[in-house]
Length: 224
Image (cartoon, rainbow, N blue to C red; front, side, top):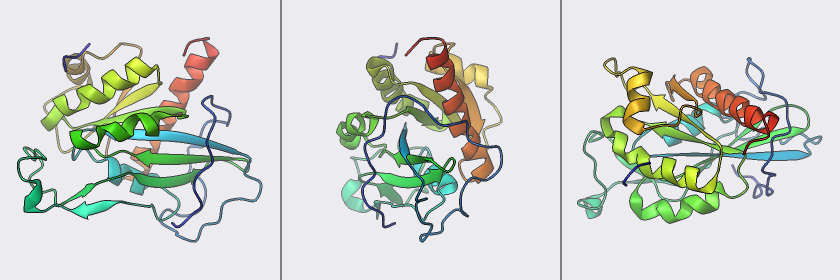
């Protein structure tokens, strides 16, 4: 363990998986279409939380996979945040999420996935437990430049018993293997660890597929 859109509100989703695994091809309408209607046949809403450290790429991942124009609460960073938000390693970051990001993916005719991206700064961590509530599972997005920022997210998910996968968002890191990242995170061998580029829809979508597969394996094995 570590030491340390405009849509109506999403219905409260169940905590157990029900739909088929997301298809390998693009699901639903083209990403970013603000007017993509929710299918009239939709009966089941599922929820995934995307968490991780400041600047790890959570907003980017939600934008990449969402079939609608995502709801974003990004605000421009100002000098008022100096000394509060540690920007070591992410000095080029000029905006930050202050509540959450929200996107949607249609899985099939009856099932819809809602994706919530959490803010990464410590001062917003109190929001995380609410975002975890009712979630199918979570994605922990990590940046090897600031790996310690991921410890709290992993600890909270383990404490709550929420299924999760870890995704190494590749910011041009060619020095660290996934085995090295796993060891540095002291990650349970049963937790999937994948590499991704959050800017690329196909890559980001594979992270969600890995999470759905992981949850299905836990349910199929009688674990939670």
